[in-house]
Length: 223
Image (tube, rainbow, N blue to C red; front, side, top):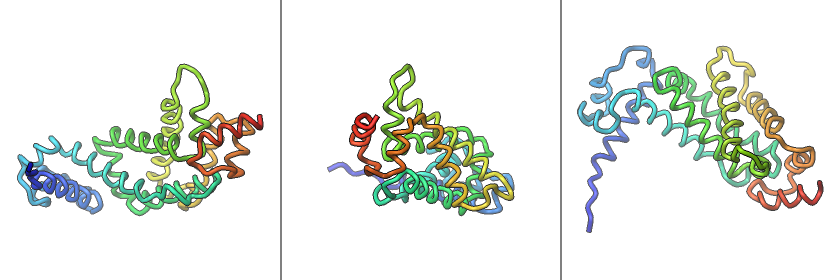
């Protein structure tokens, strides 16, 4: 029987939690050292270096952990059968989390880990667009030198820009979570390259978002 030492896992989680607390607090406005983070996490400085190497990498890990937790809370089912309902519910979850933890996300994006973290945002959004949204089959259908993943990432990058721009504004415009979610939803539908028949299909909710093959058959039949 193989015994796995749980201490490294606990140390890593403690460091991520410590960095999360710092980014959530006013302490992030001050210079935080490796010694400060290690002390807050209850580990040694060599342990921090062993797991993350530097504070930027630890910041990236903490931001990604919170973002993945936010995505995990978005229900895969019962989001609604139309694109409008699906997008509104999905982006409402995301914008609510961003608004609740605005200080944390702004600091993560503005620091040395900001570029890597913004790539994480794009990657998570792209996977959701392809795998669970009613736009998935529309993004996949086109043939050409670019791949469905390329197209999904291009759309997701536009969404990420709008989300980050909204997050960093004070006061924010649109000034509510629901308005911001509606704006991103409308922009995505307009920019995805859908035909009129495809837009009508996803707006009508004739199929569940997960039924990608069925949606493609309907579009081809009705075209």
